Length: 222
Image 1 (spheres, rainbow, N blue to C red):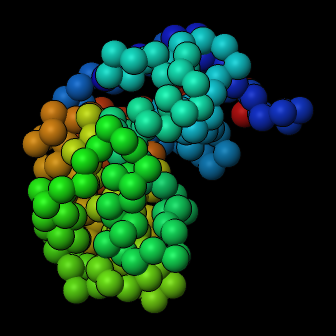
Image 2: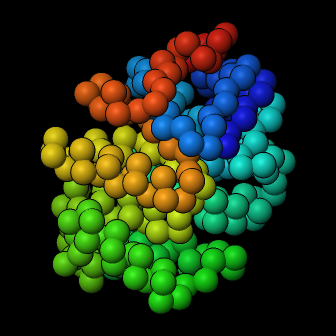
């Protein structure tokens, strides 16, 4: 599902350097990434999603070399292939929770907003405990509720790859377990891989593989 080869990246003139000689994730894997803050974990997710582009190397996702696509092509590919739960949620306050969940269908011609997609959004919201809050805007939701909206948005298109940046960070222990169950259930149904950044080591036994970022970014200086 993901193949990274000889990836290099830096932010402008900063001292941050990211170098990944090789990294792979198989289509049925549930992989957790741990490591200290500022080590580049979120940066790598953004590179995989095509939000950032590498200075060098290759990133292949689901058979597409994301690093070679144009800006427009990357946005369309991301919306149709990747579900991304952002750490800051990235919700649009002028849209309701329901509209935020269905937002990928608004911006991607390859996706069709039909009754099935709407029903799936309703079902996901119910599973996340926000089924009665779909007409509210993000400013009227708690932080945990906003996070659940972001999770539903990432899953509604049945993506082939789910990227999660601290998806359970603002939830209580019971909710964390339920949300992780939902992520894995949706991944299984779609045949998707899960790549999750987390600081919650209690969740690590739930993953098939755990990588310490310092171990696989050989030679990085960040």
